[in-house]
Structure formats: C-alpha cells, structure tokens
Amino acid sequence: MKMAERVPSGVAGLDTILHGGFPQGRTILILGPAGTGKTILSLQWLLSSDKREGNSLFITLAEPRSAIERNIAPFGWTLDGIAVLDLSPLSLALGRPFEEYRVFPPAEVEEIPIWRQIIQAIEEKNPTRLVLDSISILRGMSHDPYQFRKNILSLVNRLNAMGCTALLVAEPHDVEEEAGLALAVDGVIRLHREIGASRVLELRSLSVEKMRGSDYLSGRHPFRITARGIAVFPHVVYALQEAKPGRGLLSSGVRALDELLGGGIEIGTSTVISGPSGVGKTTVGLGFLATAVAQGRKAAVYTFEEAPESMIARAKALGILTDRHLRGDNLLFRYVNPLTLYPDEFLALVRADVEEAGCSVVMIDSVGGYSLAMEAFGDLTAHAQNLVAFLQSHEVTSFWINAVENITGDLRLTELGISYLFDNAMLLRYAEMGVQVVRLIGCLKKRLGSFQPELREIKFMEKGVWVGAPLTGVTGLLTGHVRPWRPGDER
Image (cartoon, rainbow, N blue to C red):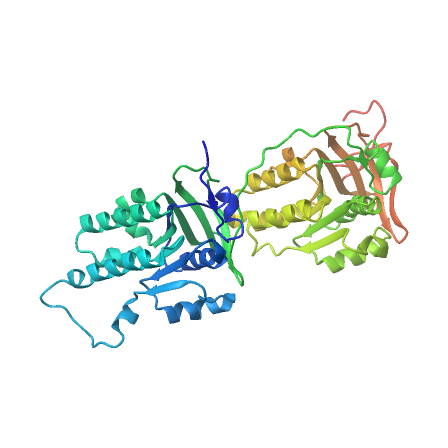
C-alpha cells in the first residue's frame, strides 16, 4: 500500500507511531476527556511547523486566546505566527450585555453565524494546517443531529479538497453519541488518563484507533506532559532472537571465574545473576562491565535501588573500578526511580544509550526494582521480554541482577518466572560450613558454550574478588546445609 505524504507531528515519539507523522491533507480527530492534553498536542503540532510551508490557523471555541496564551507560556510557547480565530463564549460576550433567548433556541441564534465565521476564516487564511478546538462546542450548539453531521462532513470535505491537514479536538461522548463524527474524519487518536490500580499514579497514554489509508503502531503508548510539551514513548514490540555464536567472550576479570564459565560470557547474550541480598551479585556484574570498558567498549548500569555513588565506591574499594574506568563517558550510571518511569520510557532511555551513545554492554540492577516499575503498567514478563529482545537485536551483552528472598533453603533462580528469557544463568548462594557462612558461585546454564558444572567459593577482599577451586567432599551446598559426601554415598 502506497503511504500518503507525511506532516511531522512535532511531538517526540508520535511520528514513530504514525510512521512519519500525520497523513498530509487529512483530517484527524483528537479524542480525550478534559485534562488529557488534547490542546497541548494540537498546539505543539502547529508551533512546530515550518512557516515557509504554509499558513497555520487555530480556531478556539472553548477557551479565549488570552487563557490559551497564559496556559502555554510555561512551555515557552507563544501564538506568534499563527492565525487565531477566537470564537469562545467569553470573547463573543465581551462588549455586549448578558443575553437569554426566550423566543428561539440558542442554537438557532448562534450556530449558523459561528459556522459562517469558521468557513470564512478558512477561505481567507487558506491554511495548510488547522486546529479546531473543540467540536464539542459546535455539537452542543446544534439542536439537530442531522444538521451537525452535515456541517461536519462539509467541513472535512472542504479541508481535504484544499489539501489542508487538520486536527479536530473532541470529547469521547461526542463520538459515543454521534457515530458519524468518527466516520467523517480520516483518523482518530485517543488520549487516555487513568490512575494506576495498585498505587496512586497517573497513567497517560494514547492510541491510534483509525488512520485511513495508512499503517500505524497499534496499542497503548504512554506519554508525559513535560516542560517542553508532550513526549510519547512508543510501545515497539521486538521479537526474541536466537543468540549467535562466534562473537567472542567477555571476561569477568577473575581468572578462576572465567574457568568456571568456559572462558567468559558470550558477547551479545543475556545473563541473569541471581542470589540473596548482599551475596555479591552486583559486584560480579560490574566486573564484566569493567572488562568491557577496559577493552574500549561503552557500558551502562541502570540501578533501580542502590545509588550509583554507593555502587561506585564499593567497586573502587574492591579494585574492580578505577578512575580510568570512570573517566569520560564510557561507563554510564543511571539511577531510575521505579515509581515514576513508564516501561516504554525506560526502554526509550536504554534505546538512546545503545543507538546514540553506542553502549554495547548493559546491566539492570535489579529485576525486583524493574518489576516494581512495571507493576502499574502491565505484565512484567511481556515488558522484560521486549527489553531483552531489543538488546538481542542490537547484539548488546546484558546482565540482569536478580535478588531472591531465601538466604538458604529452596533454590529458585528467579521468583518472577522470567528465567527462560536469559541465555545464561549464574547463581550466588550462602552456605553454612562448620561455624562459618561462606559465599558460593556457580553457573547453571549457558546456551552457546560449555561451562564447569561445579560450585566454588567466592570472596570479596580489599585486593579484589577471589574465586577458589571446585569444592569437593561435601554436598547440600545449594540448600545451604553442607554435609560430608563421598563417592558411592546415597544422595
């Protein structure tokens, strides 16, 4: 299907959803309850236009121009360069006494003059871009649904014939009570504003319900109203891919640990490092990133729980990170507040670091924090799979730090049912040996390479990370209760 020419929306992320922008010369309905950002989105589009590409016309029937200018001032916007037709009730009432119609219905007195002024302004300004805010006012004036439908169809046909790209702002009940409205326009974009079910969070999103003669990304796409206007975070779905061998190995920085891993972790794969709190998961993960940076690669750490300063200080004390690693922008640390970030917003952050900053190794710390961030916005497994799939598609080596509740006892790689997503799995455990609590490390799976199916003791000392020889003569290490074992003993 041949796609129509596009008009950039001026809204970050929206053009990705619309495959380039609004179809040129088409009329789009912007639908949403009060407070969802319909006027902001519409004005952001008008103000982003290149004045050399034609005239812009803004017709307001709800708020007076002065109120609109006051509302958009915090964004640093003005209406300079845009033709404005102010048909708001307040503006029309200025200079004349309050009126109450007793002989004729208000619609019969006011509807026809307002429609005439709209058509006259369109003919005089000959705009290439138009916003009419809002259709709800026109519909409220009309005492005859047939006449309203006829006027809307006439307006849309006139705009399309002129090649004018137009946004018509409306409330959801307008479409519910007048189905012909959605049929008359070429596209429908709905804005949503909800409160999260699990906690008091405002969730904003938009969806494309119709775009005649054009494809688009379906689904709900979260957005924020920022200091610069609306920013949309497209929900792009990536497909999981088979890990490809032959890209080389990434060292942990500890020779004995590399031996356990069959030389290291395959580049371009995903690895979950699991274990109870305080066992050393993050420290082990940072060892891989330090090696990558030392080899000239760029890496990023996304921490949902621990402050980057604390993480860096601990890694420097162990000799894993030095000032050389932290010099420049080869190693990025990003603290993410899990209560304020949309899943697709986080994916957009990672995508920018990968595609624009060139990061080829990333670490998510931790899966639990990431799960908290996803809780109000849908299924954790779906969002985690999408992020893993994106990283795979860009051949990024990823490490996912996962905390388990039990310090000893029942063995679980993850408690969230997402271990199948990862190519590799490493496990750190506490175990009781005599009167001491020791830390153990092992590898449970590697999809692309071999590894040693054994457990080794791991220590974190001032001179760095130490991994011992394979433990022998004992069993029960994974349960945390160690007992002697000899070949031939029943297990």
